[in-house]
Length: 406
Image (tube, rainbow, N blue to C red):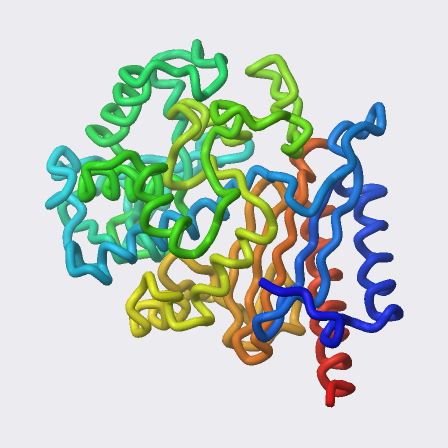
């Protein structure tokens, strides 16, 4: 990506965005990077805050690594779609053809609130029914219609002794937890019945990629996605790579692990799987996140078949409140995480740590916002309000800027 002075926002426009970011810095997050990219060029990129806000050490840099949380799902989606593009699997292949132990019948159970970690009331329409997991297809995983629960405590099946650093978890412990999930997955609906956002579906998709390729997920992701797209600063477990903490944004003080998380994944299930999972665990820079988004504006960026890239960001399923593509969230009439100023064909994703990427194809606009809002705790209302305000302002400013361009 290039930064060209002739397409930069005016000083007044930059100041307007800067003021919103500084308001967020005062109350929502201690560190952030914002990147606005349009028509192949960078309009705005700035970093904010400190990685050690208490002692005001290590100012955030434009190449600071942030915990991507559920933005990891977009990278997992893209890695899987490279296999579809290559004809090695189809969207409608049953998952059990790749993961045979997933082919079994299970009772429908109550779901679990992923934040409160409490059981949810079961849907009375499905009480007493059973699910044939062999009916689940890859399309179900990618559209969050598999019927799998939103969350399950993978570590809790055997106790929480895994408070060690994720990259030091013995491989056999990771595999044991993954096997337990695959043998007894928690279903709350039959496949195809409802949209239910599910981390479990993407944990399963990460395992599928490993079995189809014979490579670990980090290796295949690097080979098939990161290297071709020039993503040099996207990887799991940065501490295992020797990345110093002053290059990484810290997240929450974790009561379970007894320390502030700094360079280790925030998500508990990803930590219980050694820091590597299909739903969470990646760390990256704002530039790399935006470059992944650019792949879908550029007809697959040379790694996906153009028709498949277009399908991924087109509506596959919808309900009263949401529309979904393949791995991607689409603009919805109600409750859009970026407000109402982005176009109806817009698509993107958010992550629990306070990160997001949203793309407006009509404007050829990509907005990558990386923050560590969970540094202050898990209440998501402040980042939700901030994200809407910021993106609505960006859309208006970009439109004003485009009107003044020669």
